[in-house]
Image (cartoon, rainbow, N blue to C red; front, top):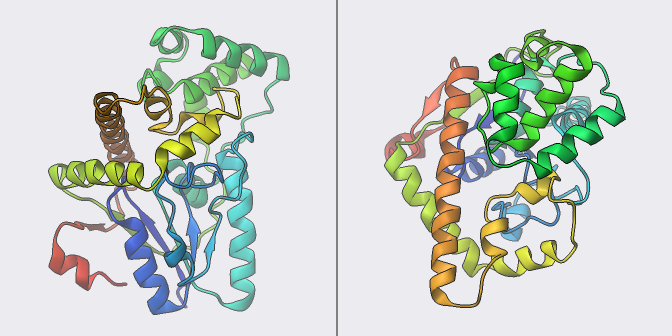
Length: 301
């Protein structure tokens, strides 16, 4: 008997949540979040979390359950989702696990590598250096010490670069090597899987439209409230796309238009990184083009 779990991955703004809701209503399933930013309570509008009307239609789990001051990680998500899976299996409850964070899906299917605990002095020092380093400098340092990891990370991805550096310093071994050691999958081989793979022009148009909608729905106020908390800028929640751009407005329409343009560009770059990950790590999953209206209407498992 196949496991009543459906996995839906895809880039931002590709329609994952809409498809998850359709399948969940059909199967009377719970929807489980697999997006690393939608876990934060402070980031509702900026992460396009499901609206209240959608939340009322079926049960949603692991959305907005973490304070922005907490450094939530893939390991914590794996613990959280393991609890959800256990509860669902105990009562035969179908699940739809949906999101755009590829590392979450990889951990779900292959477990986490057994990296030893990093000494706190090393972690603290490298995280402080990451905050102070000039753009690109931290990546150049990683490239010299651990080229295998450096080629996998964008120069601006300071959080993951810092992680790779601390692992290399603490263990003398590349994080890439640790990650190749597979763990245990939490999902059985019969779980249904799908990656949304839209044409890039269609996705870019959706991204632009969605960010403008976010602004209309209160993204500026949400940004101001979060920045007013004066949290550590190195925290994952403080890396949300749009936070920096909307946090520097001067009140003029021209400044807002420029901020929207910059945030839209950053979102497009993020979507490209997601697509690259899905092709490389989830290459055997079936693909669905959400811009194909006939295929979209017929999408089912």
